[in-house]
Length: 204
Image (cartoon, rainbow, N blue to C red; front, side):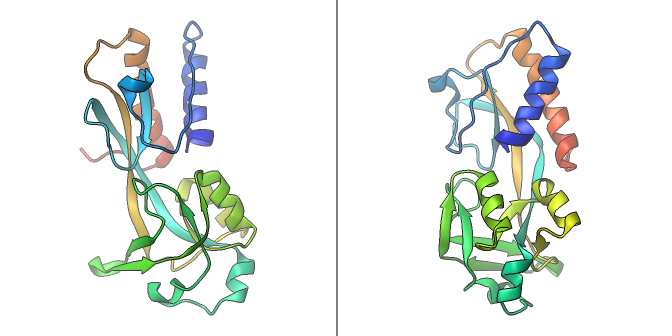
């Protein structure tokens, strides 16, 4: 998320506000605004810091994806249980979607818990996508990140009628201090930008 969407977000804001400068930090661990001296953060998943105000900025759709080469080596899956023994690539940090299990949702309110034993656990979604492209394993990936790969055939949705739970996206900032005008402007810009980029605006 940070290396792609957030970097583009910050770049777009700075281009529209040439007198503003910014420092961008990217981390896969929970963000603690006050301790780390941040004005604004973009946080997917659970909000773990009780001292922040979190503005919803849409959500990220998550799908199971794999390379054609991996699919050629595995029996064709018909249900979530069929992929439990596949090689999995997981994202570190339980505040996202977990490294030991993946809960997926299907039609008619169906759901299934897939217990996995990852062959690789990564701290970044970009690394996961590259490993999936190489055919190492199956993983949960954001739809916006793999859209071009799906269109080109480089990646394939596995069990396309099933998906992981949407990952909420928030713009967060410390609620205990007065924000500078540039930070307030960035917050409004970021909420609109992220909702548009994900195509899944926050529910009213």
